[in-house]
Image (cartoon, rainbow, N blue to C red; front, side, top):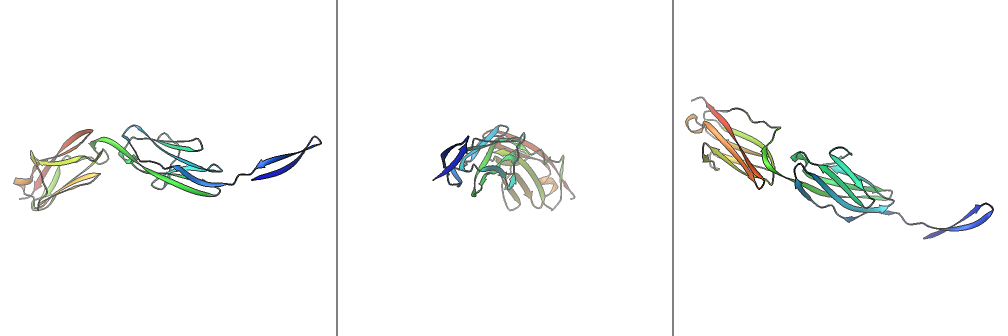
Length: 215
């Protein structure tokens, strides 16, 4: 599409033919891919989005817009858009979204950041020096951890591995492990309990001291 423009300059008349290009809504040329990196290293999420006029690029995590900072670095050459995340905690995992907007539309693409790390007990949920339960009641031991891949988890009472049964329940998730033992008695259930976490990057264990109160 062309338009002729007549101009007058220093008493000379001339014409320019200007190309008027249609506006284009933002379009994804390359979707964002999931990224896996080691905890503590920089992770880069990238995508390709074009449009005319050049779209405004914003990055989001869980619906919250990210801003340039020590933790988040954004860069763009007009086509390739990159978010660099300086990972320093397991909670940096999750879904990240790139949104492109211009005068005629908007579009978004998302990718997951997955972090690999040896298991460790979550510093934000310190363990107690001693745990208590009443005789005949239920003993509950709750341990929060971080680490990816999700570790194999084993509970011990003394040196004996614990298994699920009518009285023993072990619940494992990607964030915690929970041991519950019903109808505990001083002679059989007091003492030291150990929880062991292992994945391909390492292993860790800790001992929890349990006291059963009452007869």
